[in-house]
Length: 174
Image 1 (cartoon, one colour):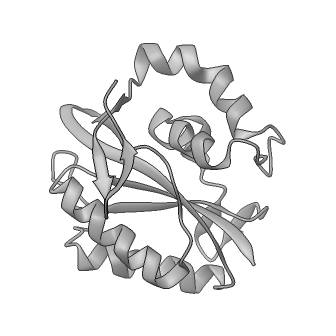
Image 2 (cartoon, one colour; image 1 turned 90 degrees about the vertical axis):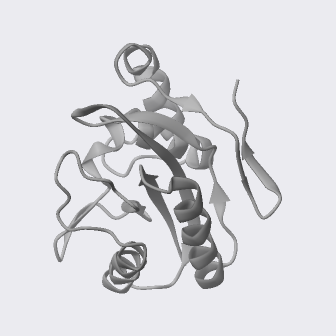
Image 3 (cartoon, helix red, strand yellow; image 1 turned 180 degrees about the vertical axis):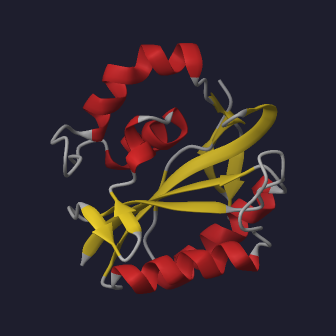
C-alpha cells in the first residue's frame, strides 16, 4: 500500500462537486483523510474564488491507473481541458504525492511542484500529512508550511469555509 495525497479545487458548483468527488473517492479507497475546506483567489484571476482541500488515502492502485481515475472523475464533473484563465473549473484534482516517489512517471510529476509554492495546496496538505516528509526536500509538510506561513498570509490568503459532507463537519469559518 502507498499513501497518496490529492488537492481538490473548484470555482463552479464547488460544494456539490466536492461532495460527489469525495463520494467517488470513498467508494474506491474507503478511509479518507480530509482537510478543512478553504476559499482562495484563483491563480492569475483575482476576484474568482475557489474552494480547495486535501485528501489522503492508502492504495495499491498503480500510479497510471490512479491518474486515469482522477482524470475520469474530473471529466464526469464537466472539466474543460484546457480551461481558459477566466473559465469556470468544475473540478480540478491534482496528485500531490504518491508515497515517497519523486520524479516524472509517464508525464505525472510527483511530488507536485506547486506543493511548496501554493498555500491552497500546502496548508491543507499539512493538516492531513503534517508529520510526513517531502520526498525531495526531506522536511515535514508542517515544517514547510510554517516556513512559508507569513509569506502566504501576505500574498496567498486562505479563508476556512463552513463545509459538511455526509453530516461530518470538515471546516467552519473563523
